[in-house]
Length: 146
Image (cartoon, rainbow, N blue to C red):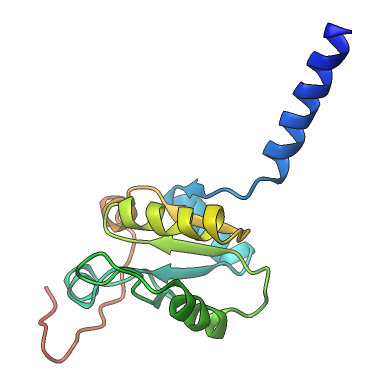
């Protein structure tokens, strides 16, 4: 009886973990492959100043998630994201400077909102630039590009 109960608990745990929505970390190479092969939508959630400083990943979209004070409006942000998506199940890859904010935003989207196909770039733009990948400079009128 104990063995049967153990296997039932193990099976239920496995089933929950398979269907659980979770944020998936990506390397720069994985991001490139998903962008090319899976039509992944790359969303840069950083600030305008950060976009001007390092540039952005080619073909990514700028959609700031957190305000300068760390606040966010998930409903408004999701409405803007939906306008960018080509399909409801399109993979979304979040990018920030170091991976911290994109990890936090991704966990909000997956764990609190139940979204699927959400990824984030491990170590953010720092890893992208360190790997020598190209960036697109989109200078803002009041912030000079470096």
